[in-house]
Image 1 (cartoon, rainbow, N blue to C red):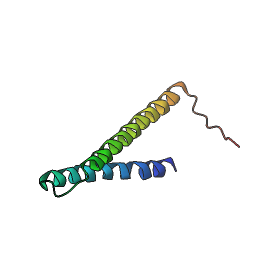
Image 2: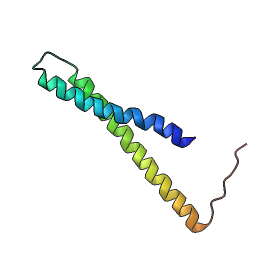
Image 3: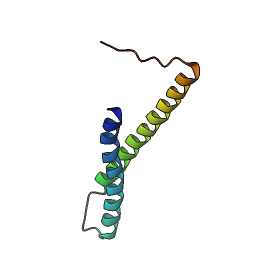
Length: 80
């Protein structure tokens, strides 16, 4: 379930970065005919931050699971 939610967050972030870079290039080549450079930059920045946070969370999760297996305390609790 979490991997599905993670994909729903990361895929739009990747699209935001890619499309922001494409938009900035088109705006720069338009010679002033197109606007929106700040919005494209915001898409790049927000997308990059989300991707960075997702990577940090993924690394933290892998380290936590590895540590859990090393100490042998990987019991799952059922929060009912």
